[in-house]
Image (spheres, helix red, strand yellow):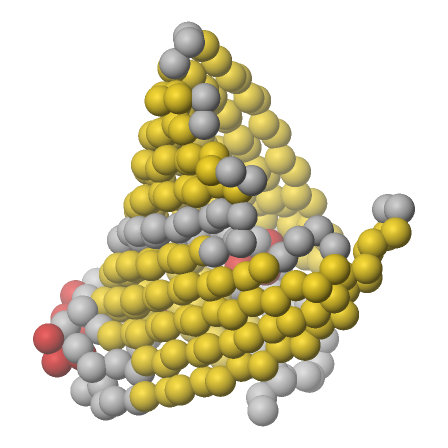
Length: 296
């Protein structure tokens, strides 16, 4: 197993990171309709001062600031006191970490200031029903992500990151009731997650005049399935079983085949509670089936 490379000192720096958020909310109520809306302005700033400067290691100091408006809204309709449906949408914002900003794909000194934050837009449609002592809920959502952060190159103990374009969305159907029965089916389409070799010369961050070297990133597709059944009271005996399925493949015609696997598991245990303390003793058994087919 490769645990990385350990060698001479390469870094000695002081990093400062701070975040400012300005939220705003709006709520409107009627006998059947509820509207929740919000708007947040988020600013994340990075500042790095490099103290390890040698003839072979230049000054890697730098600063970078990211900012984004993040709207969200949810519309809820109460069909009855025990049943409602809702539609919600919102935007997410994920900046690179200081480690992901530390090295540039072109090997030059300084922060990777061309690295963009990952943004996501999510829409969810769902319904919740209170039935006896439990609840039944179903939800369908889709998430589209721009500028997903991926590894561009790793060499000599240094890893640089880049944006891989746009990924697709996912869908999930879930239920939850008194016996904690849950099921989920997720579909994920992701384009551009695998970068071509020598991404540095094809990157839009540090483009090369040699356009003949440009390549289109290979697409990636994954299907996930999940189902579980569990009896989980607040204390005493609890037990459950679950089934997971996953398959990966490429989007290109010659890359349709891909590895897939199924994992089935059962668990049982006993939960002790006393005042504000809890102790859970449990055992779990998994059985895994893996099928691998060739990917050309």
